[in-house]
Image (tube, rainbow over all chains, first blue to last red; front, top):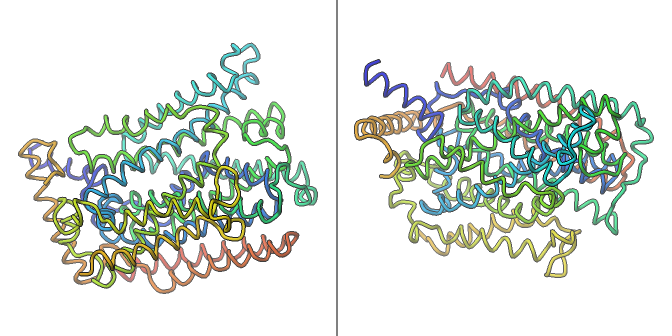
Length: 468
Length: 100
């Protein structure tokens, strides 16, 4: 192969695996691709555990609606900014340099990668929890260490990330085919299991059951589930761009992920809510065995375990892409390992049982991020006809245009961190009650208020600090 | 410029050239059409916003009357209809973009 041919082949890889803007003929994801890919991504530990939390806290009808509304509304409020990444074909954290500053975009990445470890941990822990339930069914004389939550589940969790690391290393085409197979399969199986729950328990009984662990008042339970669902809906704020840059149209970039991370994800969550509601158990691997008995329970566990692998790959890949742009000296393989392996420090039962705190406390940060990007693009940049090619070049080359103060947009960073104070004032994520303001939750959703607050305060501060 | 500093000089040069070429191409397309790919049309945006407003309305219904299971099934029907509608619309927009 001649040098120029080899270079052109590597450049093609660069488009998919790193930072070059993707042109129209290089786009690989259509509307249906997105639904499947993000559906496979969506039906991960986060969906299952959120469903379980909802099932323990509210009734079946409330769980269905709150899961849908929270997830879809959180997504919808950020969805329109995915058009930016699809419009210019550039990666999420490159274009985030416009609102946060050229160095600020890198700082956002450094905040996000540890958050991503949290998501990897929940998937891996579900795998581990599933394995410690499954092994005694398949192998009655299994050594006891492999049936414990610690170290058994933790050890299996560590093993679970090996295959996804390899798939993520191979890139988006592998991921596309991987998910084209796993997503419909998982959906069919979740549907089948849902049907058996409805048939076994009966719809009438299911919809009349009282939740096993509600909070003090109905308003508190209702809003807690809405808050957790919103937390998951907003959580995708950091993920839109990595995939939307490869979208064949803006509609597919906006609607496709919304369907995958919204209604399709919620379909699995609802099934989990029913399971938790009927059994009173939080861990899906526990209630699958209670509901299904040894045979169907084992089938359910195998599928549960398999369902965690796709999402882990889909978490590692965008993190590695973004890290590659910020740290180009490091090789692709090393980056894939760096954005995945450190997650192992979170593979503990304490993390597994505090999912609601993660969704809301850390959720405030991704909510504020989404609000700032949206405000910056649709209010500030819109006035200047969005980005010019010189703007994009500046972001790629860390130029002067988005340097602001030492590489940081002060308006964005004040809005970002002050949102955490506002959030903790309105809502206490640990006690699931009103925060230090003494008012707010359960009459106001903390995350919706934070979204609105950050959107407005960023625009006000931007106008004050950068008048031009 | 830090973007491709990990590469050999020859390859780095090829990548810089490629970045410039792409930005130039993007510039021309943005000038003519506003986006590299078909932009989201009015109807797609309206249907998206309406669907989400509808969702909030359903939450209010269930808050007021938790036994209204019909509301849940109505949601399923509305969702399915809009999925098909936007699917057709997206295909049409892509065709229109090609013809343009």
